[in-house]
Amino acid sequence: MTEMDTARLRARVIEVAREMNARGINVNKSGNVSARACRAAADGFVITPTGVPYETLRPEDLVFVPLAEPLSVRDAIGRYLPSSEWEMHARVYLARPDIEGVVHTHSAYATALACQEMPIPAFHYMVACAGGASIDVAPYRTFGSSELAQEAAAALKARNACLLAHHGVLAAASTVEKALVLAAEVENLAHQYAIVRTLGTPKLIEEDEMQRVIEKFRTYGQPQKRLSGNETGGSE
Ligand SMILES: [Zn+2]
Image 1 (cartoon, helix red, strand yellow):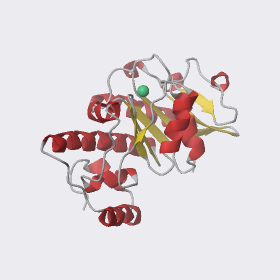
Image 2 (cartoon, protein in one colour):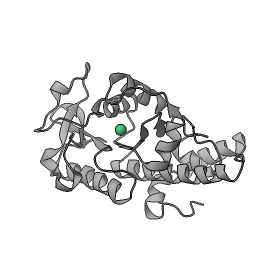
Image 3 (cartoon, helix red, strand yellow):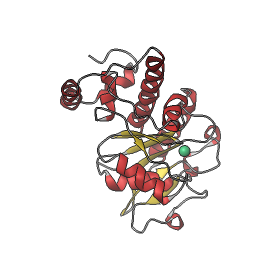
Image 4 (cartoon, protein in one colour):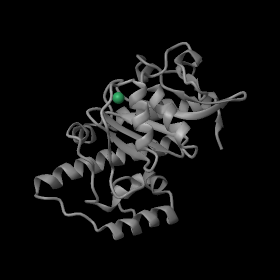
């Protein structure tokens, strides 16, 4: 159920934004974080503002953006402007009613693959943590544009994470904390995949085995929740 826009929810978003930098999956203010929230009768989300360092962010600095068509930054409520990628977050929430948190980063290895327009194939079973047998690349569009927002949302129709060509990573989940864990896992997989490629042509897991893994993640569920305790370690 969608949470109310409270100081507690805003504090969680700030915590995730700071954690993103602490974990080294984001540099400076290039990333952004949001959580779905409702405010009185309005459905929307709270998102990090543009141009404010995470260290000094306070709950009241986050911006509430209503999810009402036509989307407009003029409808945003807050003392700052929302992140320049606010529409990308908005389109994901509109396309995926099950999503409650979104994290966007420019983490190094995942972004390097995105710059080469290289998807991450099934070289490791954990690729299934994004909900499919690969982590794909959404086509390049100008940062902050409606076109990028549309492409990103389309890429997240059938996955919970994607690479954004020549840009970065987008991860979405049932909580903002799980979206962070997923973004970190995508970076981990991208790093491993870059190493594997230096060892030769990557050997891939068969499609039917990946379907079993995807089903197992779905059935036993919440790989992201489990990962939050031990992100790189065994998920068996
Ligand atoms: Zn970006």
